[in-house]
Amino acid sequence: MPTITMPELQFGEVFANIDLLFEACGLTLALWAVALAAGLSGGLLVGLARISPRRWIAWPARGYVELFRNTPVLVQLIWFYYALPVLSGIQLPAFAAAALALSLNASAYCAEIYRGGIQSVAAGQWEAGRALGMGRLRLLRRIILPLAVRRMVPAFTNRAVELAKNTSVASIITVHELMYTARLFSSQNYIPMETFTVVAMIYFLLIYPFTLASYALERRFAAGRA
Image 1 (cartoon, rainbow, N blue to C red):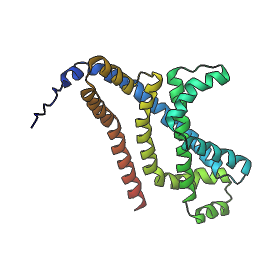
Image 2 (cartoon, one colour):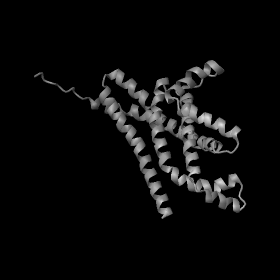
Image 3 (cartoon, rainbow, N blue to C red):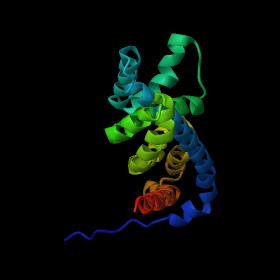
Image 4 (cartoon, rainbow, N blue to C red):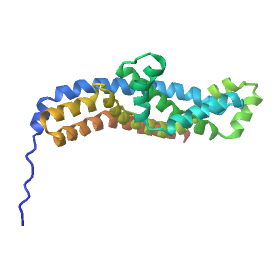
């Protein structure tokens, strides 16, 4: 039988240049933070529009959500970087194009989380607020949203984790984030397995603390309901 020889691993070469990957992490975290903040805030506005009784508000919001949920984020990213300048004459920097695409994509998903969370609140809570003379916006702010947010934490956690991983698509338009730097380093040194194994570990170390924090928040809300 032929002898199978295992390739010689060169993790030392990767760790000797780990500073390059750590520097790229800064851009990855910045992209994640911008898109997450914009997604949460924009998603709230779109989500409220989705449940509006006025069709001229609700229908465009639904169209927006369906457009960004049913097209790949990679296509959206490439469109904003390459197609938008053709239509508008405005060339966005690579980071801005990536942040815009990821933010709009995240806001569409967050809008549905807000919509589902708000609609899950018992009708009696709405009726109680109206009986106290509260308007729709005040009722949402004082009663409905505080109750709904507790139920939305797991969904928002999943969306934030997915968004962190989606930042890697920005490497397609040469945003020098973690994945782009890893691809460049791997091609120059011919050690893809070692490079991307380390990159996977870095992504895990970036994302897992956020997941643990969300678990703690879920437990806190659960204790508050007890």
